[in-house]
Structures are given as structure tokens and as C-alpha cells.
Length: 176
Image 1 (cartoon, rainbow, N blue to C red):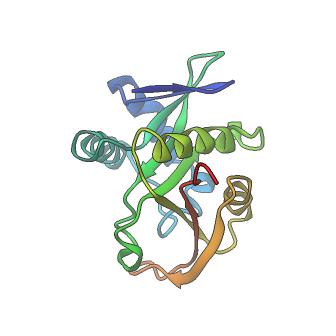
Image 2 (cartoon, rainbow, N blue to C red):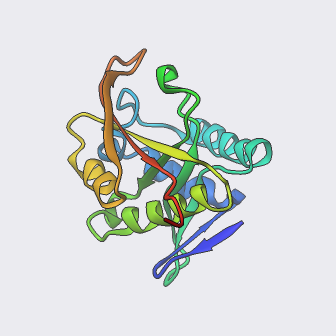
């Protein structure tokens, strides 16, 4: 599975993605808005990559590794995943993203999320997707707005008890 945008390749995971993704997950500023804000080590990162690959095998969709076309550098991830951390919205599929901080502010997360959203509504055949954004994460809220998502609800995640906003978008209807 491989998608291409103007500047990115969205693809399945490889063993060599572990170290760069672990660096992304070890950055406190990147992880500030994820779960309880805790950084993740290489072992936890590996478990996350393995879970993404299991999702591909079991559901036919999952998080894509993001690669910059110009350099081949692995930058993070984007794609559809089941938001098990927020049971009240299940069954749901979330479009999520996480990008190395050095590449923030260039529109890459939006570009990747758009491609992942098109995949979700196209090949994956989903009718509705959500995006769960911690309250205060204005950068991710702007991405949901650019994707055309609308606020569905405000709630609190179990465990870390962090306030989140759930944005949603239904599959575009074709025809009159």
C-alpha cells in the first residue's frame, strides 16, 4: 500500500522506520498533545508500529509511515486508526497524524491527512471519520478545519482525563 502526494509518500511500515519514529515519539513537544503527554521509548514505538501493521492485516487500513519524497526521510505518520482510547465514540475510525517537529509549519500534516482521508473514504470504504484533538491544540484543530471536519462533541478521555474535541466528517455523497 502506497499513496503519493506532491511532497510525501504514505506507505506501510519498515524495520528501518523504528529509529526515526522513536525520535519523533521521544520529543516532549511532539508528544505534548498525545495521551497524557508522556514521551515514548523505542520499545513502545515498536509496539505502536506493530499495532498499525496488525490493523492493516485485520481491518484493511492503518496508520501510514510518512516519507518525504525529496529526501526519503521518514517524518512520522498519518492515517486511519480505531481510537480505542476514547470508547464513547466507538465504533469510529479516526484520522490521525504525528510529525517530526522540524517539519511543522510546512503544511505536511495537512497534506498527509488529506491523502489519508481520501484513502479512508475511497479504498477503505468508510462512511464517517473522526479526529480527536486535545483542547488547546490549535495546530491540529486548524488541520481538521482544512479537512472540512466539524465539531461533533467535547468530552474527556478516560485515564489521562484530558479534555478533547471530536471532529467528524461523513463520506461525500456523489450525484444529486
